[in-house]
Image (cartoon, rainbow, N blue to C red; front, side, top):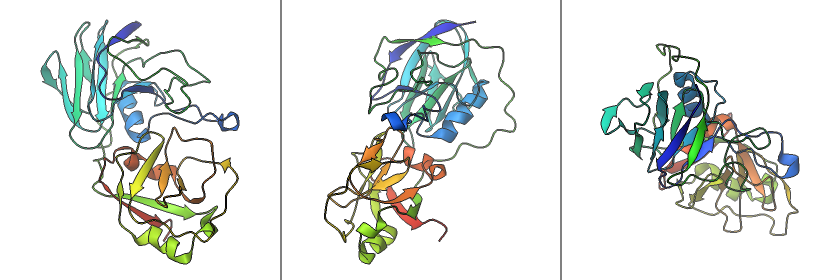
Length: 288
């Protein structure tokens, strides 16, 4: 049974996200997709969906929606108060939402981003094989506003019992990012590289889906000339003129002209998705 979901309260920034649109970097299209990929997959699993199905990704303040048919929903990712028509229900577990009832995911108690998965998934029109909103290029559905309506997919039945589901990870107290040096680490002095892996950094309030920006000491450059634009990958640690590392996240540009001192493995980036402003950040040598 298909249906629709109406946005009652869009919150600060709520977007549709799935597993992303990989394979288009040669055309300048970022990957996009859910920033906290493990939370996205687990929410879908508990809702009875494939792990790649489209969900809602909220930012800090949560959101509220009203389905026009009964639906099983899961609110996961950043912990928050969840209600159905004002009555408290479970966070991180399947909840049955009657037709016309309001499912409200409140402000994040810890972390930044909550994920709302619905049995059958959300079905806005795909662009280049993905339903994800891309804040850099503008591809996919735009950030949600109050009153928007999204198509809801067919739900075959009740979700699989989740007795074996892994626990939801907590939002990090410290973000530890293992970094593989290169390709432009030789643009920095030995002292600059020591600074990267020993200094105390914090998440900047200027962080977003494009990149996790840091506050802390600048990395000393060995070269100050211009670097021609070159390809950028997910997890690239780019160093702009202020010398403070920026870790590229899912909506990052596909090319850039500032040197990349290293790359953080994708498996370590989920913590960055949930790290609020002021959270301590440590860069460590991968494998060290």
